[in-house]
Image 1 (cartoon, rainbow, N blue to C red):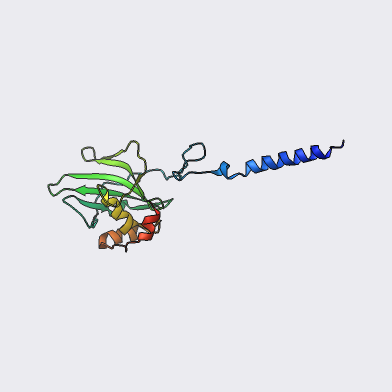
Image 2 (cartoon, rainbow, N blue to C red):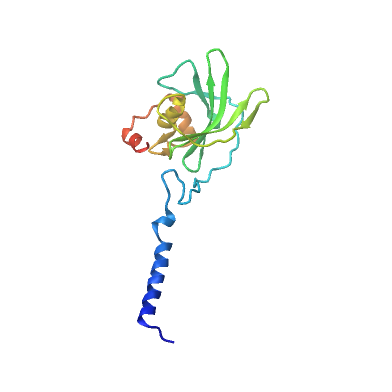
Length: 188
């Protein structure tokens, strides 16, 4: 069986077209919000959440613009997880005594934080947070504690600063990282 020159040309063009579509950048397109070409959310796999024990060894978080509410991280709860994530128990205390205890994570690679659970003092148990999506960490405002933990204690150049012991030492000593404005402008 012989093929004419035009049939061979059409076959070559068809193969080229199919290969071109298969390796097209559109087939691997991903937008800035991590959604694929057809909107399917693509996020890194996250380690399962295992709640820590009740907070016992509190380290004061040194916040530059702190008010009446003081924040602490439980030393024993600090863990480093895959994907440049630090998990920890955060305790917020008022001078009058009431406290709020949460189990959270900070993703150093994306400058985001997430709420995993709330401590119930009455039952002495963790209650899993519903709808825990990652939230952007702004520089100021109600989540200033997250910005401090991100910039000064847990993260540097979008990576975790070290082991859980290293991170606890930074909080305990009040070590503050120099401001890196070049990174901040790239993260917006």
